[in-house]
Length: 394
Image (cartoon, rainbow, N blue to C red; front, side):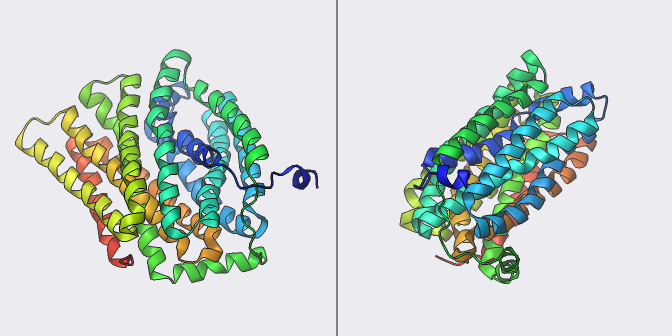
């Protein structure tokens, strides 16, 4: 009753939604330049240390399957508050962990922050129709792209100066700040008549039976999968191949999200004018053609960091063009189940990312070359382009 009396009555402002999504992305990427130090500190292999990345993704996927229907049944606000409370507690647990097993347990609990990321697009879909929602999602993604852009850079600096645990203390502080912001600004937007939680869960088969849902969701899963494949492989490839330290590696890893932000800026201007399908198609072609050109550069010349990064930046740019329209599309298949659609598609995205991460690392460990890394990214981008056969031409 106290929470209900204290809850704001108006919808949240855009910056609140941006921060809700940004912290989820920041939690995934900021500590990545520290994976090597974490492995050394806990006396484990680098491959085992990557469980902090892939395990986080698996836990996020599972939680999204619950958070979506829960928010459709009980509202966006209580789910977001519960998620950020669990996240803040787990972040402190990670920072204080005495061994890798304890760290990994808290890291999995930390994935509860995905609840905030699921709520943000569902809230936008509560408030706007598909065309406007795509522009709003693009604007939100454009601003939140600063998180993964600067996250690895900040993480690299923190690791170099204070050690890998510093990132998790920062996560805990950010969690407390976001908790306060959600409490005071996030008014409930899910005002539709709510059926039981069991009925909400029964909505999943209806979504899975819809061909457009699969087209949009698979396109997003593979688009983000290419991003995850880059993040998982960059410490193995870019650092040793181009002699980069942790801070420089963070800069390289952050570059892909700078291109993502540019793509989102273009999407904000054009999505409402050209429709969902043309924007998704344009994004997928940028990835395939850009990566193909980068590989050609390695085949006909000595290659180098500039050519490698050119291909990687095309992946970021393409995702910026694709994701807002694909996200608006998947949420519009069943507007009455927007939260469930956000949770299910989000679970597919992170589950796909976990599969990609666990697959890419052993392949690159055998032969960690920039050329092989780009080939993997091109394969994923080509599969993403093929999913457009399932997407409505609108």
